[in-house]
Length: 420
Image (cartoon, rainbow, N blue to C red; front, side, top):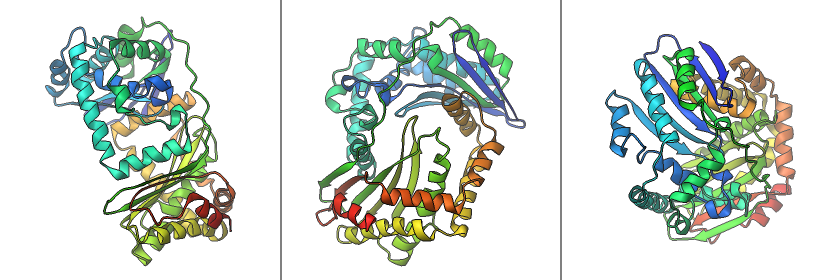
């Protein structure tokens, strides 16, 4: 497999990886603009814009966009995160040029027709309603808001309904004009692809774009705090978060090994102690996420209102215990899970293309798999124990509770138990 990178004179980047033996390819454009790039009055516009990209261009209708890809058996979609918006397709190798043309068309030539805006507004309001009706979705939005209050990083991706109802054509054009420049775009492709052919097409489609000055989002400030909403539900939903390293910090690998050992699988401490030994829940896990200047370790569980106090207490106890007796075997297992997950995932051209784009956004280059594996292997038990100890000592935390949570301990009580 060979990775190649080309940067056009205007800053637009093309990165590809040919995967011998594959007949298909994944191709897309990743834009370094997402929910975090919104001003307060724009909250939700990045996600709405992603929807509108598929609602017609100067040369294709909404139906023709879908038909162009599906007529050749392909698949096209998009997503919005807090720091990225991606538009991507999966097609056969012979249709890579078509996929790039369609994605280029929806990015460069959207019409933002008023009637289509109204249709998609209704779709997004339904999406917001669905999220609000899904407790184990909405609790993570509340947790994010508690962790980063009154900041773009803490606001929801979907935005509040009252703002979504007010967005118009000028809002979409303004956001594109601020954030969709060639230097903010990466065309990534993996599978049955030819780099030179893709670069030639990229030059024709995107070479004439005018560079934009990059917009710097406000720095993240992890503050923490508690959100608690009582509601009659079958389960009480519990989510606890702590600040973690950002994705450029070498300690991010230690944080990931720690969260894997704490709650990353069936053999993890939380799963074994809370579910297997005590039967307090069906779902419990810990994970580490990262952004450009901060990160977050999240612990989530769903249980009954009666059992929530015990579950919350044991969770904090296991965090404390990890600082004292995390074993070599646990660290070895967590590292193996991380490496296997990475390598297995990269057997997919879609995951390969995603990684190419993300690595270019983060590092401006593609770290080799050997380099990444070496960084994971360099995390030892001492580093994990020290990291666990720093979390126990860390004053800041965020807590979100939803459902029958009247008996749940407060964040202050959990912090006192954590520090005891």
